[in-house]
Length: 122
Image (cartoon, rainbow, N blue to C red; front, side):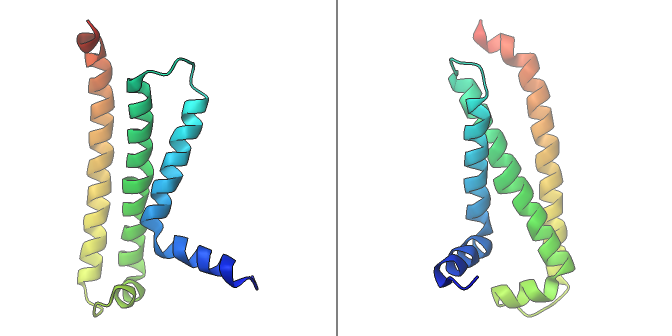
């Protein structure tokens, strides 16, 4: 990796992993829509983008934050300019709780949405 431009791009995407996961989620949604039967409805497109947004931008991002704050707390504290303290673990566990809540809510939404789908189309 002697190319400084490539190194700068990689550092940008790793340091801004929230934006990286957003881009990955958008690309995953587009790829999933390519494989869907045509014509695409607005509900199908919205569900694809929302699902992959939840998965990548919120779900995996919170998992990365959990691992960073719980297992690499000293590095995380130094990276964001905080003193190292037990608060790092607390932030990590809060991120994990948010991820679990999101996962449960999404499953409930999908199961209820399937039950209510006929109600809104009549």
